[in-house]
Image (cartoon, rainbow, N blue to C red; front, side, top):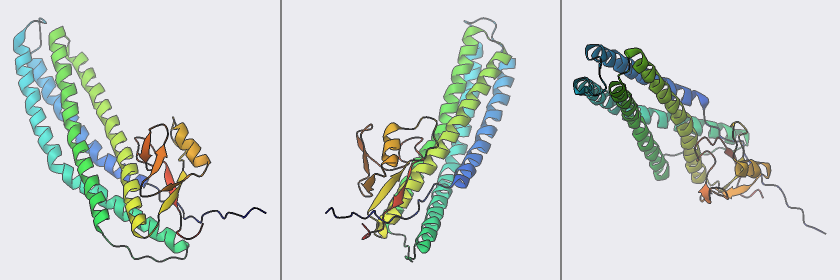
Length: 267
């Protein structure tokens, strides 16, 4: 007679909070919009004053390059000043929401656990802050490179201002989409990392993979792990055969997967 194997008792998932990502995106969008307007205004004014007549004319290029580079210095400084504050606000909000959701889930399961800010949580918080500071600072640098490239191509090819402005608008759109990806991806990563650290601290050792089902191009290995209710070690992660490495749900770019914490002693 076969011995019945009980299914592990699990808790509800802790999901990334969409409101935090939306707030993060709004703050970044405001800065990006201000930056794009500034570049468009001053570059357009300089372009009108130095309208290239011949592609080989060097004078417009030199004048426009000075204007663009001054704008680059200004906006890099502005983003650098706000990067740490915004990154800290984001990381702290994710930590607070994750703790609150986990506390509520534990309470529903009849458990009461005292949370503490231990070294592991502080390390994850600081790593989250540092990652987001770097990403925020990269936004004006990448936007500047696009603008400078568009301006120099316009001078070399003798384009009119209207054509250049279309190029600037295109660069603005690309930057906004990248900011949207940053906020979504970092929200998933931060929620995953902070939830893992908190759960390990209270004695949760493993999780059951839950596929999000929300992406346009789901990863087949993640779909399979979710369908098979794959249990993985929370300390090490799950070995993704496609990536050929251990990962956590929500860790890879655009991954929205989560996990059900397994209550110790209930296998």
